[in-house]
Length: 200
Image (tube, rainbow, N blue to C red; front, top):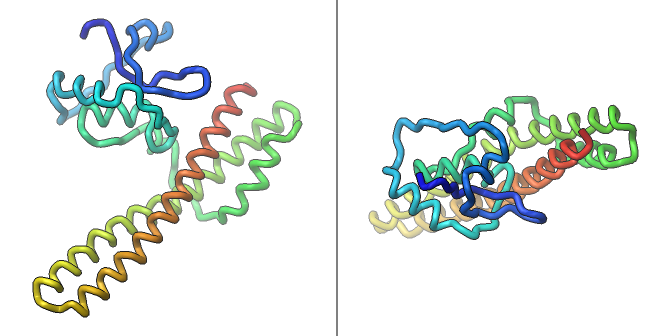
């Protein structure tokens, strides 16, 4: 390219999509290029990246640097780092997180604090893995019942269409609740990871 990179840049109090020099982007580290089997041509990738300049919607689990780069290249917002970070684990109740989080930020010694932070992160992984499939299922059901309602209307069955739309609304409400839960988990994870870095 022309020696510049568009990326999510960490500023003092927030992250923002910005155009910087390659040196500023690298910060002395080696840069690795990722190859995509299917992606846009370079000019389109650049235009997509420029369209989000100034954006301040960074989120560790939903909209991080890799999400942004993958979206620019393929149109799909995805992060292999996050998928690898969230392993399959057993189910745990959300309320069990609060005590771990409270303990993690108390004035314990460094070793104990690190253990508590790791425990809190592990708890979050468990809840995330239980919640995300439910969220995806709810989104699929919203689309399914929308199609059912349309088919019912085409067959002049308003009664079935109303019933289908009612099911759709139930799943939509459920999806909104699950999305808020995931966003809360993402926020907690980011806070814990930042605290972990600062305490290391």
